[in-house]
Length: 244
Image (tube, rainbow, N blue to C red; front, side, top):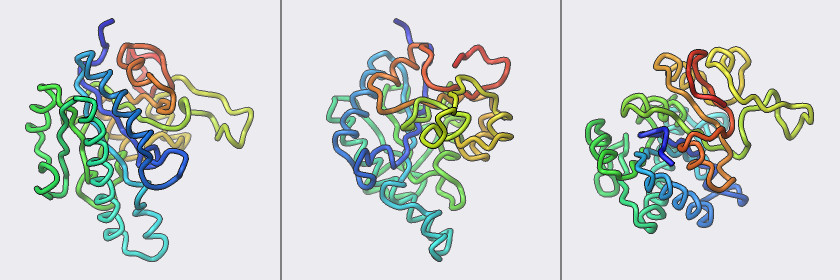
C-alpha cells in the first residue's frame, strides 16, 4: 500500500514515554515507539517528532509551586532534550538514522534548529527529533509541534495520547462520553476540548494543518494513519478530504 502522507510530524508527550510507571523513561515504551517509527520510514514517509518533557519536569506545575514561570519553562525545555536523546538512541538501534535539532543551542549533544537543515535531513529519510520546544518560555510543546509542522511543510500532525481519540467528556469519569471522530478547529476552541492548547490549534487552523489524535498504546496505529486508515479523531477544516 502507498502512504497517503509524504511528511508527518508526530507529537509525543513526555508522559507517554513514562508508560505505566508515571515518571522517567520506560525502555519498553521507547523501544515500541522506535519500531513504529521504523515501520513508517520503511514506507518512504518522512518523519519529524516533537517530544515533551512532562515525565521529567513540568514547568507549569513548578510555576504554580512558586518558581518563576520563565525559569520553570526553560527547565522543562531541557527535560525535552533528555527525552529526545533517549528516543534518538532507541530509533537508531533499529537501524534508522536520526538527528536531534534543539531550539536551545547545545552543540555537544544536538544540532541547532535550522529549518532548511531539518528539511534536508527529512529528504534523506532521517528521522528528525525537535527538542527544547520553541526555545521560548510560555509556549507549550504542543505549540512547538504546530510551529515546526508548518515550518517544515508537514501534511499532518499526529498527536499521540493514551486514549483512542477526542471525547465529548472524560471517558474515565463519564460513561456516557462519546468519541468524536471529526471536529473543526473552531469546535475544539469553543468547547474547550483538551486536544492541544489554543495557540497550537489556532496556528493549525490558520494553515489548514489537520491533527489526528490517536492511541499510541495500540501497536501499528501510526502506520495505519499514514496508510490512510480511519484511526482516532481528526481535527480539520470543514472542506478537508481527511476523514475521522
